[in-house]
Length: 272
Image (tube, rainbow, N blue to C red; front, side, top):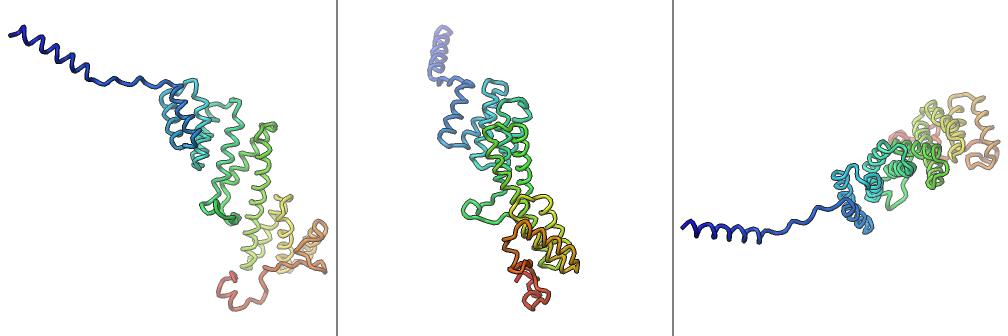
């Protein structure tokens, strides 16, 4: 009987081993990186992000570690995940402070901060962003400024300079928006201060002429004719053909509130 049991057990073990499926070999670092690249080439950036993160977790010090972090920055950006793009760029800059592509990481961080200001409807229509908080725009300006200062010959420097001009104009428009708000509500000192800030800090923006006109009107309401004349002369000398000057050289702001407010103005708090 024992002589019959042992052959049966051996046969059962052999059959179990034969029916066991073969395990697939573990993917190499190169193979996994190729998968991430294939996903990016197919514009499947969410899949690429998953593959790149898995690659970083499995091979944190591998030969593709640096490039994977750079690709992760790009994949997050193309997925419109701008906060994640900023985080990925910051991590790369901390990990590789002397990397030859540091200018790229800095540029992408600036781009992510730049586009973080855009709302959902900005993708379909042009909207005025001057009334919004411009915190991310200021961060973008600092990123671009750092880029053109540290890497003036970078291939990304020309675009960074153009975006800096745009952001400066937005910042000046933001201050002007606040100045109009205060002027319409009779807070002339606050309106003058905001307009003065535009004149002093954003001298090369198109908003300076209106800022000077606000200062003229504000000083006249405060009965400060000498300061009003000084602002008027600055406007007339630098912008003689300004739309804010009439034929007699006097300031004319169409939206400036009248001294004698009507019932509609009182009821709508000067909104109409």
